[in-house]
Image (tube, rainbow, N blue to C red):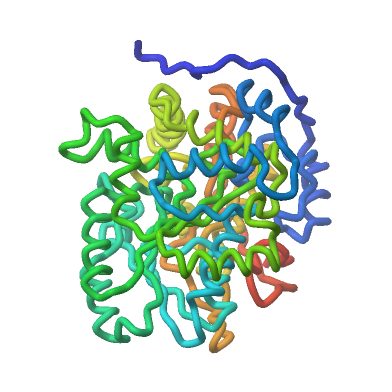
Length: 456
């Protein structure tokens, strides 16, 4: 069939408050033109993030009821640990309350001031955790990623030549680990090929540097490999996932993404000595090693979600439904990152608003206009999010300014997405009228979460 249907039925609904433009003008002004500071009830279609916003399945809700809330050694922990080991293949599993906690623990143990951590493209919390410790987060996206409109199958890849050059420049002793984010969220949600993962692993091993994968959207990345990479068409997603992580020394994971959970994450490694240091820090800041800041019911929901996300009918629907939005916008001449990623549609704000300078924050301006037009909440990924250089305090314009429309899993229908397409088209029609913004308040790290703006 040409029509791709949702491979699930809707069993419970939540009402949406339909606001007027006048109301939205007041709400966004009160929020300092920062969409993070809006009340969720004042948003019609919430595409701020796909993190923790998924609809859980009947199996996940039933699993909550068997959550063992024992402080230590709960049955829920052992089910969770067995599932993570089975899918990802790592020996040591350390639960955390979400992905950024896993990053903080990993980097606190491994990163010292002056060290350099390369990534295909760091996401916001990854970059901030490294820079907070005095390290330098270096993005090494592949050359194809620099053209948002270019159709290429694996624009999330790391530039391996640039990686070799960086290692030669700073020395392997100053690189505590190499990371790859799958899919490449800050780079337009683009997938990473198995060949690229394999090559980065080879380079890391040659220089004796640990190699980690940020696994937030591992299943979506694996399905892209199945669809696009030679030799994987007849392999199951589970088999592809096993190979992906066989090349790594560990991973971080936010279970709020590809595990359909509302909270949770984990850190994995095969290094027993490193795992012990990480558990010591976990006990200090998160909780005992068999719960790590999570309730037993959360561990149960994650264990079920990790298995559900490997179902290929779901993954096919997920990728096709995201492509549906990107294709409809492209047909209308609206600039988006091509090809469509797995979890989000990325509007190219610089091409959408070419009259705005990067330091007039075109991504923020476009995100605000989408909210004013139709109550849609997205997020800027660009100059606002990348922030100031922590060493010089100077603004650092990003290589691109995007607006990410992240689609929560199993939460919205096609008619919701048609509404999004129509809203973007209406903003596109009056794009020349849109003004930029300036920041009037900002914190030193992760400023996009709490900064306040005013129109220019």
